[in-house]
Image (cartoon, rainbow, N blue to C red; front, side, top):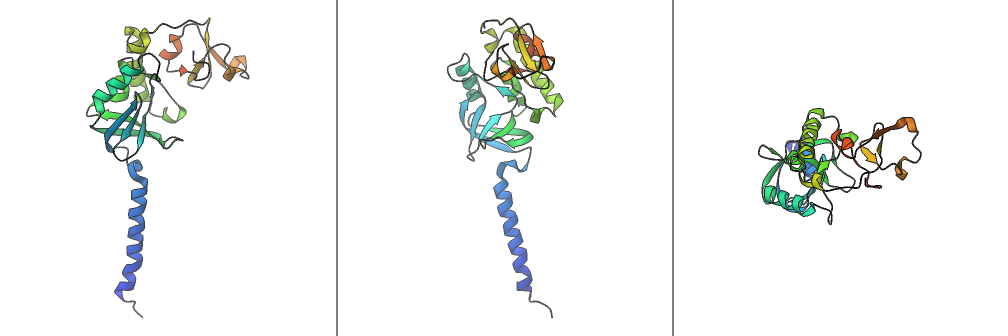
Amino acid sequence: MRMPKKYILIPILVIAILLIRYVAHIGPERSPDDRFRVAGIIDGDTIDLTGGDRLRLLGIDCPEKGEPYFDSAKAYLTGLILGKNIGVSYSHRHRDGYGRLLAYVYLDTVAVCREMLRRGLAHLYLFEDNMSDKERIGQLLAAQNEAIDAGRGVWSVPHNQERFYLARKGSYRFHRPDCRSLRDCPPEDLIRFESRLDPFRLGYSPCRNCRP
């Protein structure tokens, strides 16, 4: 016995509704080429979008409030992208544990993260997750080293030099010699740097515990 057409259409409509709800739930994570409008600037590496999402710029870390060049980094980013449509490119993860989007940001042809590094308003900040794009990481590192060589922004701020600095092999952070994060690390697993700038030039960023 043939079923009436209306009974055949019901499951099709249900599936269609579920698909629409699924896509809506995915929201901005559905494509690596999404475009957004910037609604607010939190600091040099965090922005709010008109859709309600907060986005953390990938690959960089800017000064925190109260640190030198915090205001400069925030002001530059504000003048560059506030109220404008931006493009984003995701890496391995689309969101962090706080629910923020994680992405490289572009304004037309301007690679915003790279420009922040080039101006000395940020330092490179890497994780295992975003190391797959070696070409892009190489460009970011080159921009940072240009700023280091020119003494721009954060690289003009004097620091007390330790006798040496250490990094754990396979990590992306460097430390003071007495950092508790290295307490149980065998000596053979450590890399030694004589200058504070040496690890930065290789793409390491400072430990958040000992803050070298």
